[in-house]
Length: 313
Image (tube, rainbow, N blue to C red; front, side, top):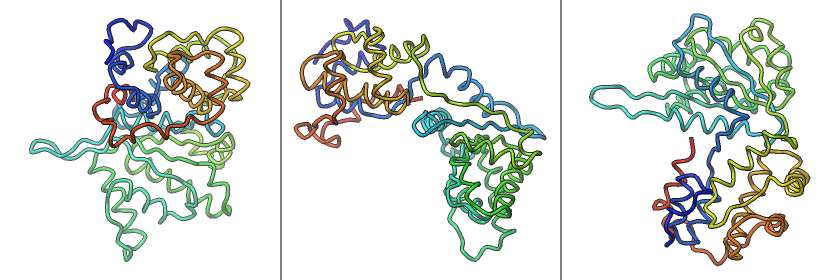
């Protein structure tokens, strides 16, 4: 075991992770966690405000677009963890602040209502009529205190007939009007076209894009944030011109690829005993690290390494 006190290059959670055996440090590194960094602060504040502000007669929404791997799902997952469901007690009912559904293959209002009910944990009764299903979805959204509905893959509305597009958008609008909750819509750049197909709905949404990362100060801050969350004994200096360019070339500036590359490099740094990420570790990270010699997670006591999971927002 290593003392966490001397690892000033790490944040508190990663420094605590230095007390774990190597097997568990590897699992710590590979575990999903959201790294909140400066470039996303304003967007996260916007999202949290949507959840926390009082209900409005005219609910607002937000559309976040980006190429695959840009970080849309990461943002939504982080927000859902931040506002996790609250179990009922003797003094308070169950609360489900955030519900998430996907529009993939959703061509009818019935499908959207069914997915909403499933996300709420409500058993689906096949014999329900359309109006009853709609009423049940609206009632349960209110009863469980839902404050934000996340609609993923919103661009899939475009893969349908004009009639089906109209039904899908009308259903989204109905939920906003009846439950008076904001909606966070996620999709690739052409998702904007789907939302703008309905002028009334479009007027109630703001639009934000998650662009690819470039060689600038924001990217250096991101790299610094990433390595501070990796329990390695020695500091990693990734913001040199050579390494920044190398990372961007390997990942094409896509956030998911950047995170995976850095994580794999960190795992190689543990497996080789290097204990920091450098050009050699980045070269190794082009290949998936061989974990066959490590103890499987259920045996490695990942629960004991929960310091890493607490970082996830």
